[in-house]
Figure 1: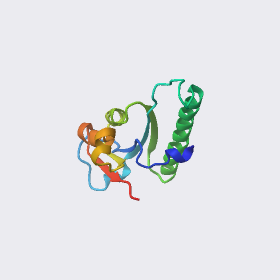
Figure 2: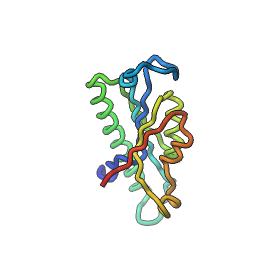
Figure 3: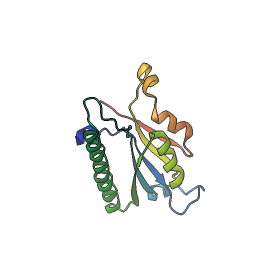
Figure 4: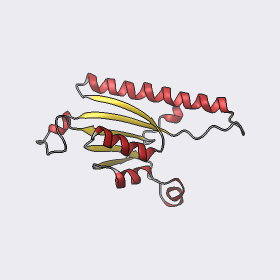
Length: 149
């Protein structure tokens, strides 16, 4: 089940916050010392007991998502800290673009770095674009990275 969550562009972002500043300009190179805030947003639809997936199966799937997120982001944050980079992680449940923007505001991040699926056409119309909404609503610059094949 973990393989289903390993998509690097799925509802994750990296917020970079310069330490000791309140939005003021930092000397060149200072940004490299900023703290990293890793975030993964889980989308959990209401549980219904009909169809192929029973309520208990869906609950187990959601729990596996939470466990994978805790392990993966916890390990990544620990790896960054071992390299001398201040890092923390957050997990939120909700609408991805809303949660990303909310955490960016709460953490006072200076930049958001996030993946994008690069959808276009009908897929984009039907599924929307989390990255596009974050770019429009974020309180700071957003760097999007498109996943390559």
